[in-house]
Length: 161
Image 1 (cartoon, rainbow, N blue to C red):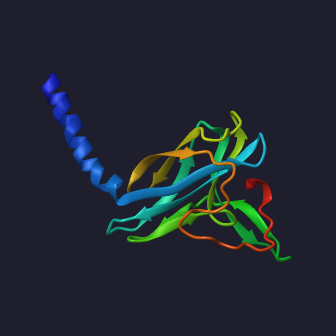
Image 2: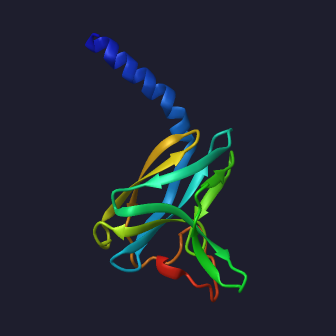
């Protein structure tokens, strides 16, 4: 195969992949750790496309295990963090607001401590958009996303913050 054919094939693949990736927008991302072993990442994920999508999973070299999590209320009325194996729906024109006390990315068994202002790289895996790499700054001082403030009252935040 000639260099020209290889470049044309790569260009065609890029052009065909770009619309799906362009439909997914990530903003307000930040990460923090509660201790040397665990941390969490928060962000807003927008689907600007005309097709529903589904966030299937997340990967990162920042920890031994990286999972999609949320908080659910148990029978005693206590909020507990839990792994969401099925992932999260992302409707066309909609968003997933990953924030403290709700959906988030959980890091367990950190490979290194999260240091203020360093950048953690994750890969979000979507059913339609495929893999989206996200650079997330560590901000140990940030409590909520810039776009809104959510009061969780007496909610037990567990090990994510």
